[in-house]
Length: 220
Image (tube, rainbow, N blue to C red; front, side, top):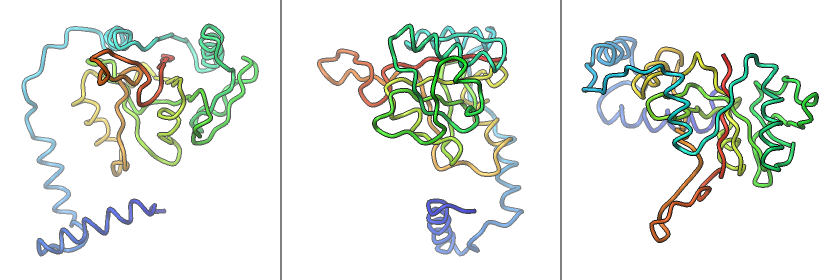
């Protein structure tokens, strides 16, 4: 089912195409031409990537003031989250994306609700579409099953990232999106460590426009 936002976008694009003398929806030949252009478009010069993507991602994430813990299997995620929360004296109560609702949270002493976050939620647990090794960045996509509020509203954001979804750079991240998604979501968010600003007296302050903390749990 198409959301109201998607319908509005489609209506706007249809009006633009009408002014160009084109039908409301692009034909298959148009889509094929665009896909061919993207597929054959040469990338600009890039640095040589001589590093291991997983190791580089962890190094860059730490540089950005995120913290990282490795777990060997998905069932170890709740215990890792509980350790992090207890270490920082944080409540063992969180909201999460639906895909993580069935993990053994209660066995680790953590109460989790699968829903979008509200302004009173302190801990948000998400996944990531992929992670970018070059910059230590998480790439998330908005959607019904991946509400952006879970990573944006709580003071603490915990991201569960599969090592197999760590790509070298931004170009590979967008290539993965084009290859796997039928259409792009309304929003693509990039998270590079805790929110920060230096607007006040040029002093870097964490948590200015979002989470104070970003903790990454890496799984195979």
